Image 1 (cartoon, rainbow, N blue to C red):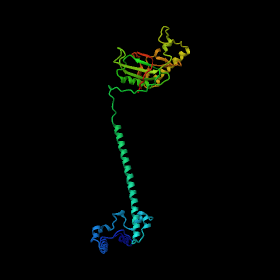
Image 2: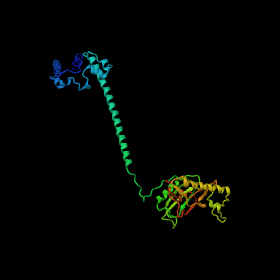
Image 3: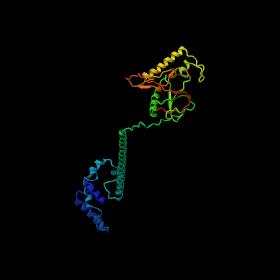
Image 4: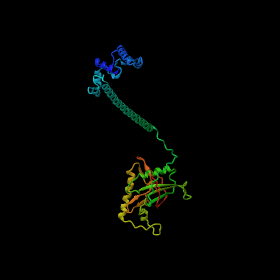
Length: 335
C-alpha cells in the first residue's frame, strides 16, 4: 500500500489520493492482489478506511504536495538522500523507511525536550509567584505588639573571664518594671565619647540580698574600671580613711585638663546626640579618672532625656543611691 502511495506521489505530486472514489479504487486493487496470495478475505476493509488516504490540508501540518514538503523542511533534507524516486526495490524501501523513522524520533526528542524545558520554566515561575505572594502577605500582617506587662529576656554575652570592671548596685527602686530599666540601659549603651565612662552592660538578679531590697530585684550597672578612682578621692583626701590608697594632690594643669574633659563630655550629652541628655547630678564622685588622669563623666545613665524644644528646668532631685566599686560580673547585653 505504501508503494502504491509512492507511485501516486510521483505521478500527481500529492501525498494522498485526490478524492474518496480514487482511494476506494486503489484499496480494491490492493485487495485483489491479496486474494491471489490466498489470504483472508476483506483484509483491506478490516485494516483501512478509504477516507484516511484522501488528502486534506487539515492533517500533517498542512503538507499536501511535494512543494509543501520542501517549503516546510527546506531543500536539504536527510530523507532525500536515502529515499529515491523508485521504491519498488524492497532494500531501497526499507532504507527509506528506517531514515523516516529515525527522523521522526529526532523530532520527537526535540519536541519532548522543548516541552520539558517549558514545563520547568512554568514551575519555576509558579514557585516564584507563590513565594512573592507569601512574602507580601507576611509584610501586610500587623506587627505583634508586646504586652506592657510582658518582660523581654535580655541576651547574654560571653563572660570575659578575669576582666576587672566597675559595678554599681542600684539601691533605690527607680524603675517599676524590668522593661523600663532595660530601655534606660539601651539608651546609655548607645552613647560613645572619650569623656564618658564606657558602659559595658547590666545585671538583673531576682533574689533578695538584704531586708531593704525592693521586691527582691537586684539591678547592677557595669562600667569600665577607672584605675585612679573618682575626683572626690583626689580633692578631699582623708588620711584616716583606710578603705583605699592615699591619692596624690592634683596639679593645676591636671585640674584644668579635668575641667575641660568634663565640659566636653557634658557638651556631647547636650548637643552631640538627639534627644539631648542632661546629667543633673554632676559631682566629684561622678567624675572618674583613668590611668592617664583624663576625666570621664559617670552615672549618665541616671540622667534624663530632654526632647527638643522642651525646657530642662526641674525641681526633681536627680541621682540614685548605689554602691560603686570594682568587681567581676557576668555581663548582659544592653539590647
